[in-house]
Image 1: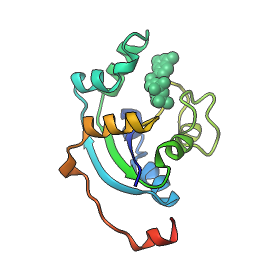
Image 2: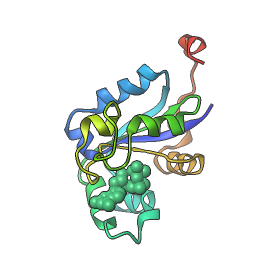
Image 3: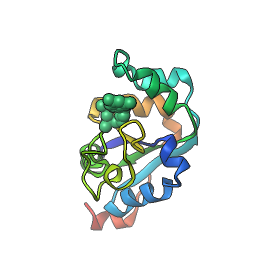
Length: 148
Ligand code: DGI
């Protein structure tokens, strides 16, 4: 089954949105297989956002993601990578539709509440960056036969 990496960023944790965000993915029919509250080190932040190294906002991005605890998660389900991106909404909340997480809770691109992998390659890279294999829990839920 497809897996993705999702993370409630420091602004989402401070604004008490962990539960709301987890609920949205549970309500959709996806299954959490890993989750932890953690602080991101400078080194991990640089690795995670490596593709943005040359961007003018890279320093700001690293400072922000290390500014407080995040809630890192792995979610599983059919087409979860691209559907989670749809549920998150556009990167810039000025463009994200109402009903999406960013559309409902964020105002500015630098504090846009949630991260989600954008491809199978980044999902695999980010899951491995944040979680050890033994931290991920594979289990069956009988309700899944009514979802898939
Ligand atoms: O995958 P996304 O998070 O939707 O977007 P991305 O991978 O293009 O960018 C990663 C994060 O970088 C994004 O969630 C917020 C931040 N970001 C993107 N563009 C800008 C930005 N931050 C600032 N301050 N200015 C930008 O133009």
